[in-house]
Image 1: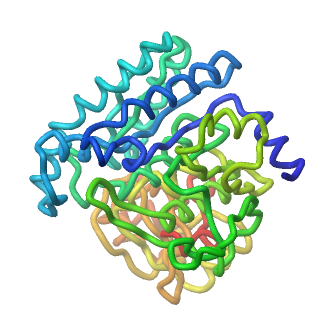
Image 2: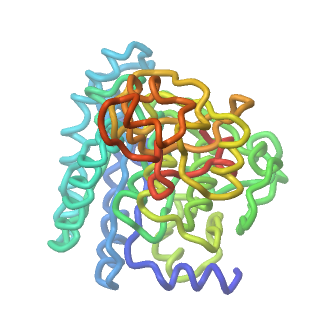
Length: 384
């Protein structure tokens, strides 16, 4: 264990704990794993007594519905999956409430879709709700709202949701509890001699390739989605741990600085809340394509985007929404909050700022996207 890992963990005041379906369900009994929930609640109660605020990002609603109806195979149709989520969510939350009540903890349910986090006002409202829950020592239990989510507003998996919730509540650490000990240098199912990687300071291509995906009867995802989540966390300046939820007192051992799981070291510079939201919390409404001069100004010179460097506008949006900025080779180089609707931007693209008012017939901002409302993606492009 490096000293840096210990230092990071010693500074944690708020942690997000993501729990997968494989831990929350008992395949033998075909029901929710109440024993695991009891152990989870006990550990969280001990962490809260130490002054560490805890948030749980849970999977398991569809799995709970799956077992409640006695199904043999996970359906593929959206409507059936949403119905299972509706059936299972209340059962899942009842199990959480029962387990946490035994440890003198109250819980609260939050169901989110990507639409909730893409809208900055709703994002702020969700953040404020979480802060109020923390002040009342209530443990938020957060899940995707699978009963209404469709492909356009789905997170894809709850590993992604774990990242976004960590950013939303401004936590200091994300812990992903799963059914494996952490990240291995090879797939341990194929190579029994595969070695567990305890520390990751640089997430290179070789490590990314060692991660594999999986889809089971009760859940989706796998190590690949967890590694992609770790990459986002590292880049945003927040550490992440992948560890086995089957290990006794795994959460307590992590905070006791035991050499458990895989610790992903963050970059030295922590991104601001707005930059994190722009990078991963919102889905852009459209895109603008800029010339090489504007690309250089954005990336190398850290300047705002002006209309003169814009070559074309794709999509339909209103002022205040988020758009992607593509370079002259059609690759994404930035994204940000745009000051113009797509219609107005189509009229002023390529113009000098002094000509905007005459073209639109009104006073308007010089910047299409101000630097403070933009994140450049030269380092993050592969994730998006």
